Length: 109
Image: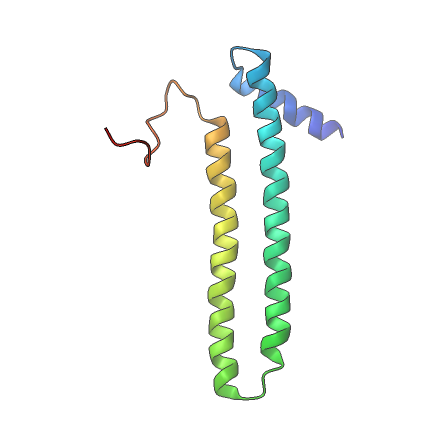
């Protein structure tokens, strides 16, 4: 619990938003991002374990080879997607608005 308090103090000291409401939003967004990342990683791992159990039960070598390739592709997509989402949310939470370039994908003028 002490390390969690140190983490929150470091977040507050590093960013120092103008008002207390912005600081609370940043803390809640940080906690939500960590929880979301943990849930997504566990879901990806359970999905991959379930797929592995299914793939190992396939009798035909050709079908098993195709299933292993598909499982590897699924694993890469799931785990890279989890990593991308976690880093994307962290950058959005902790970036300094004054220094940041506009995020691509905004309205086209």
